[in-house]
Image 1 (cartoon, rainbow, N blue to C red):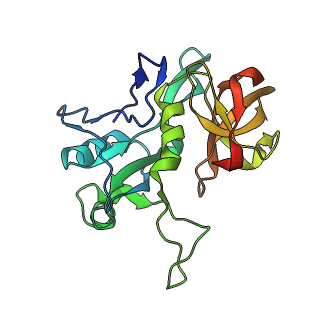
Image 2 (cartoon, rainbow, N blue to C red):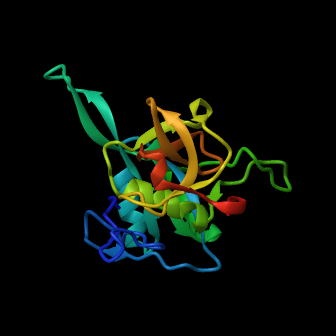
Image 3 (cartoon, rainbow, N blue to C red):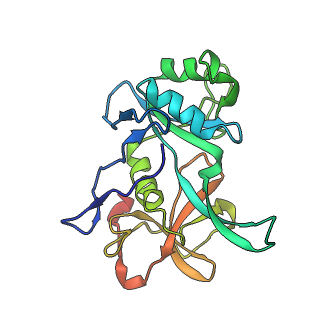
Length: 221
C-alpha cells in the first residue's frame, strides 16, 4: 500500500487510532486495519524492487500491510542534479497478521522468494535463536502518524547517531504532528521528535518542532 493522509478534520490533526487503508495498486482491493488478539505487526524484509508486488499480493490475500515511505535526495543520472524521491523505509513492510500467516508468506507463498523476517536481535527464543521482530500497535501508532503525512522534512536517521536532549518522553501539542510522542533530539541542527521502534537500527524524526509545541509525558506513559 502507499501511504495516505489520515487527517481528522475536526481536530486538525491525525485521528488517534487511524491507519490508512491498504490498497492494492493492481486490483484496487482494500483492507482496513482491525485490531485482533491473534495478530501482531510483523516486520518483513523485502527484496529491492519487489516491495509493491509483495504488498499487492498480501493485500489481495486479505492481509493488512503498512508501507512507510520517506523522502530522500538522489542524483538524477541525466541532469546530474539532486532530486527528492519517496523510498520505502528500510526496505521493510509491516504486516498485521497471525504468526501462521506470516510464516506462510515467508516460506510458502508465491512471493516468498522476496520476503524474509526482520529478526529481533534483543531477544532469543527457547532454541537460543532470534525470533522475528514484532511491533505492538501502541508503538506503531506514532510511527504511522509521522510517516503517513509524507512530509518532506521527515528524516530517516541511524538511532546511534541521535543526540537526545534528555530521556524524557514528550507529546506534540500542535501542528501536523499533533499527538505524536517520542524523545527530542538534535537532528540537522534542529530539535525534532524521534519515533523509534525497538529492534530497528533506524528511526524516524518529525520536522522541526518548537519547544512550545511540546509537553512532557508524565511517567513515560
